[in-house]
Length: 295
Image 1 (spheres, rainbow, N blue to C red):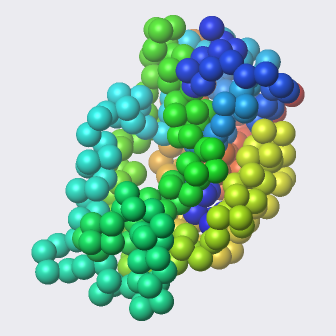
Image 2: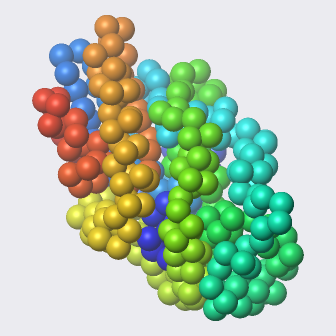
Image 3: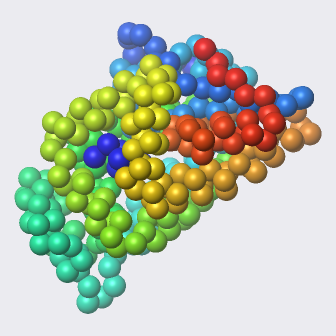
């Protein structure tokens, strides 16, 4: 489950105020002669207790004149996005999920459906494995108190709108949908099987471990539990989900730095995209920009 899991006033934004110690996620400043880009790794689903965020993150947000996310806010918040995803996941007439899955996986999914009556097996049978895997993962995460509405990206989307900060997307929602919809059947089967095999207790430990690593800014731990595992166990998926997208985003981030308008930007993307040799941090470093982690 941990491999699938690797697939928001300043202190009281949409996530609401929370008491306790501030989360201190890793954030980097990339700069050239006149512009700065702040790179913040997002955890896409969190809990209210994960707020507020640390002062260096809030200061970076305050300094930024504009924001960039994986997908633009108007697309992510579109009421028809879920329907578009489900439409893309619908199997062609005459096909069904049961015929695409090993018998053991179908039995496990049937049991899961019985314990989650909001997802009747007859409805799941019309969907591709990748979408069902997402349903399983999201349902289990929500049961453990994780909310996508409290994710870091949505947190700052909610802040940017009343502050009149322009916000763009590094890719279209349709590109993210196509990424999953274009996965080979074997990879889809593997994702779904892993989601079904992870019992709630184990999944809870995995998600909580990743959450703790993110909250404390433990870059080495996050890299070990996400990048290293995914690259080793799912090399093709790692290439398409992480490496290819990072290289597609790189020139866009460079354009923010090279912009003559002298405006600073805060880029909020999944933490996976910032880590390791294939992450945006190292890619920008190799391009000759000054990169420093803010602490």
